[in-house]
Length: 306
Length: 268
View 1 (cartoon, rainbow over the protein chains, first blue to last red):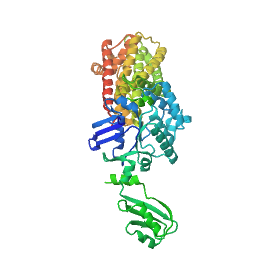
View 2: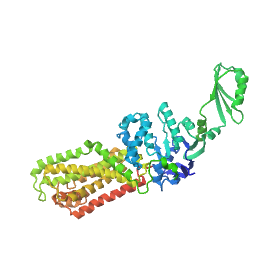
View 3: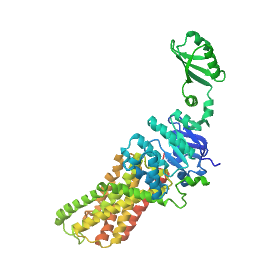
View 4: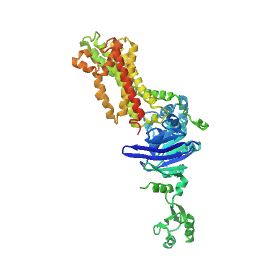
């Protein structure tokens, strides 16, 4: 099957900095793919090269088998971009912007108008159709910028930090929409700073750091790479010093007299099961038990720390 | 491509994106027509003021220039000034603001070629130059009682000069890094050359040395080309004016295409 995105030996060099250093990436059709990395790692540069906003220095990039330079028209009709910044003419009315954008992709006026109305309804923006973009709220602008990317119904949707600065409700509804879009067959490439978002949405993740891909795997496998885990335990009644002595071979953080403590352990040497067994053996009543911290975040930090 | 492509709306384009190009030209026209009181009315007011002050008032004290009244002499130059200003301002501001807000990316990610984008934006400027020129011509002709002797020639100069200055405006919008720089070309180059370009005087009225210097000013050729079309008089021969205006339109247009295609100040 032709990959949705195929990147090989991609370089982007500026006179004083190397933004991308020979990266390789393959995204399959139907993937929900996450590109994670700290600020300045090269995420946006990669996306900009894919969408024609940035010229590559070297390497090959193809979208559904079409070279991004030689077959740029075929590439761009297949791609929708949701950029990080609100980059529209703020004096234009929302519906006009959508109709113009469809036109730039070669769609007839009647198709553009029907599609604009469909998307405005879907994103609950119908009553703002004739509002100038400058008069929309932040959340509405975020929805507007996504509708613009969907006007030509792209085969792959690229989103650069799509939920940065949006409230919880909108974030959840965008997640729901993206999941549905992906289930209907649209390949999605997402960059995000929110590890929770990547873990919740993406099937596969690439971690990029200082212009190099440092890990590519399924989200599940990346999380499985963790050798150290931490578990947060809440007891029904405060623990006693005697009880904690049972765990002196593990790293335990606890406050005297508190009913909460954290156990950090090496997964190769011990397991959740044995920890629970030992806890129960002490005769305590467990009120709550949960992993301490986000597991993917721990992988991310371990792979990108200097 | 497989049948899974069927859900995609955007058509495959083998012979250029004519619909995209047409949409862009319409958007550019929509942009200046939406604020017609800021784009089309000001040159009209300026022209009326010039006609009142230099035509009716001071002009009555000036003897004929090349056998026509000073009022008649003035009209083609005023039309040319408004054409130059309209075409230049449209593309320079449209492109600069699109870069400033980032919405130039709407075009860059679309399935339009760089040539189609450049031509679309520039034709928006040409449309404004023509609109301004036609409106100002009608008012000036009515107020000054001038008749246009060679209408096709007048239209030729209005269209090609619009193309030339829409291209200069495009280059300025591409080059400028801030609003101050955007006005530099207009302040230091365009305005002086326009005022010294024979709008208000015949080049024969200048001292000999200044006559020679004035011949290096391309706007002199455009003004005189249009004056010939309106009145049948000119300081410059018509073929020379035509070649000059074509050269002035084609060279910056090619520069626009090359720079934009390379991503100058557009792509990182």
